Image (cartoon, rainbow over all chains, first blue to last red):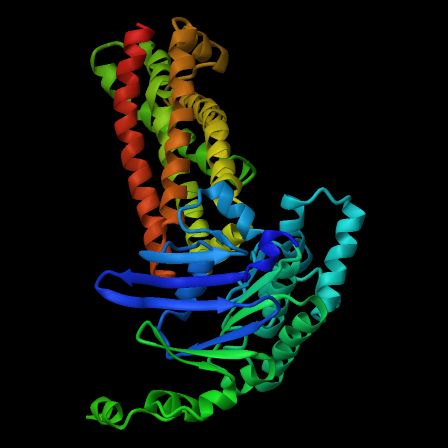
Length: 259
Length: 214
């Protein structure tokens, strides 16, 4: 067994990030095992998306360690970081499809740049990826012609193009209707079953996340306040955890807002 | 290339023509006071080739293309398309910026030649409104003393203008933040800064041209 295979795919230690005087992450420690799906929960602005961007090197931490397959990625140069990024697929909150390219061209884009597939093999691969997310009939459309849910599906197909072993999802179901949200959840679940990918999912959709999460991590003010399965979190005596899971606002904050 | 070059051509041709006609009308009147009307074709040709054609082209393209690139890349930045490219291990600087900068460098000199041509023809047309003058005679008088040292450096310097427009617009676009308002700011600052740097670079390049091509 190679050394990288015995290492956890994602290992974060004492991760800190500030924007100006605002502390976003205040010493996060998190290890994600191979094939595990971890869901990050927390109020808006608690640094969940920043956490994902740090893992993929889009932002640099102030301090701390981030290891991908055992390799420390903080301080890597661009070429080395790009090698690491090829192992990671990222689904953005708004899908981030290239708006001047068709659905097919969007999915083919990473394949064009990183593989030497002949055009016919590449086209088959793109169609196969689109079929896996139920978008095979819309390959000729531009992103502007797609609904939010369809854009997320295409974004997922693009993220899977290079067969990453780690997938990062930034609010994959935000802004979608319940049925489409459930379908995206099913896709995440089937990815774990079929490909055994390791996933980190940032979401506010607790009910949806229960379907695919192996473990839930709750962030508050830059710290992990609770961690475990939904049932374990439900049993937590922490007042914030209970309020977050029940969707209750803090009474004093409500009074302040309406004062 | 198509967006920077072909699609800018009508605007550059119109700006060049208008400039040529205005030089003919304004300078013709001034030269008449000194009894030097025969110098008019040479004044139009020299003025357009050496300075007016290149700077008008750069400012027009800077406005049109600079705003376009700034807004396009800015919009890609705020919608996370550039992040998506980086996550796919593809350099947005090479894929998005280098191609646009190169297109600006290659297209500016060609567009300048078009602006010069249209300006000279419009200059002849405006001149011949006042007195009958054949195009052949106009060109003969205009180009009699023109040398390569007049044409090549002043046209070639527009490649530097293209570099400035491309770099400034790509830089402003890539560093956009703040949603749609940020995209607007990126487009505006691309045009303002590109125009400013083009004018400043022109002063420097004219000085250097006079040193190396006296």
